[in-house]
Image 1: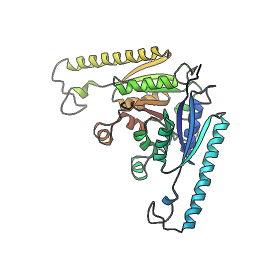
Image 2: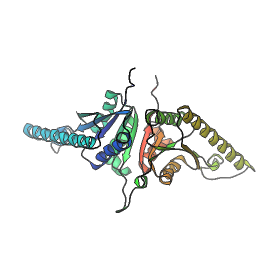
Image 3: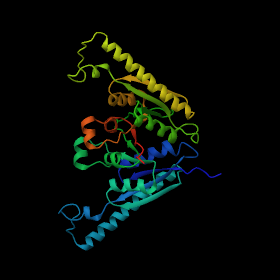
Length: 335
């Protein structure tokens, strides 16, 4: 009988502590903790073009001599070899040996998205520097770019800052790590749940690597009851608030019943189902802290920049504010 082909995870590495941590986190959660990992790992380093370092005339403008260009290119090649050697050493130290290592030249954002296409990857893993909005605007963010442009699910691994002598909540226990999935009645959230169960809770992963919690954010009735703005409840019709609140509770119940059916259909048990009231962005980020989650999973609507700005994006907000690794599951491309 032919064996099922393993799903591919592409992970971007460089010489930063954030990329190193992302590699170690991925190995610890998906490879070292199971005797037969369901994934094949491809480690990719983007070697910069020498042009962006040579000369003061601006990126891509070579002001120096031809010799300086060659000298810098050789240094960049040595750095690439060192980065790959370090990644190889980390993998081998965790007994993960079925790994492909690649060095491609170019901007890391484009190199990683191209690697996803090249290897038909199911997931791209990148580390997060934790830049604020201003730094992201001025310096650019590889994780932000890939979250929006990569054609597969994107996992952004965060190295949380803690006070000296303290341990991040998600790492403070030896129990099974918690995976928190945001769920609603959209096709994107349902798709994210199904993708997660298929990839992380399939029958080939036994026992499961994570404790699973599904969290639904039930909207507060106020945002539906007043045309003068969210959060301002005029309450002109007696009992309207209570009626709407009951309808929202019933909707939350239907969403959870659907989620239970999906989990049961894949024989995924020992799942906790939780409903919290509030804005989904805040509820999910607070849920990460409340349940000590190691990973938050959200579905992406695939909005463009304008729609994200006008409508807001739960996945964008959580990618920047959730205090744990976040996985953004992309919708299936139209065929």
